[in-house]
Image 1 (cartoon, rainbow, N blue to C red):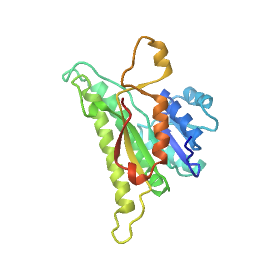
Image 2 (image 1 turned 180 degrees about the horizontal axis):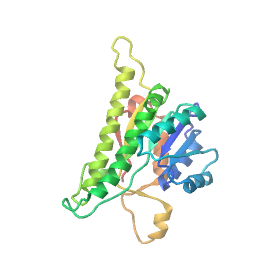
Image 3 (image 1 turned 60 degrees about the vertical axis):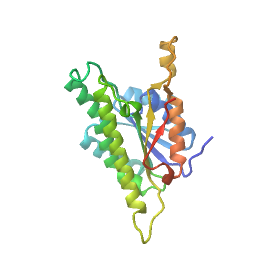
Length: 244
């Protein structure tokens, strides 16, 4: 089992999903202090069944001002974070190009992109200052192979990937861009690439379905731990495939 040194504090944005619970469990088992953020207090409270010692906060991460207030409160309560795992997402699709609705785009923009932009900006200085700062998102194979019915979804994921790679560039330039006295790379940002996620509940509800190419949420949790433990210079700015 991988053990993360120095008890890093890792914030999971969108922690109440099955992938959030699996990631929280994996990080906690690896020695991290987990901060769980979501919008549903009851579902946040249920994370105590996953692992002990998880700290939870209610916050609308699509609201930049609310995120800034949350960041200030977290800094007061426990100090800076070392990792930001962005798992906020959702799916909207159908209807071909002409049928992509404004309502679906607004939903995807808020959940997939705005939440990432707001949290990464609020905690960027924390990650840059950490000895092992990490930011990761979950992106999709649809970015490379978009369909007409999923145009909005692929576009939102592509925007999130571009933002993540820009954060990676910022980390690289800040820590190793000085030719006369370069610093070792400490912070890293990367995107996990999946087709879709599956958990035990989905399997039980669909016993005859094969879920070919899907990524188990526990595998995602394990991959997040490995990303936190990896050398920053090796993983910064990378797309890490988890799709079979």
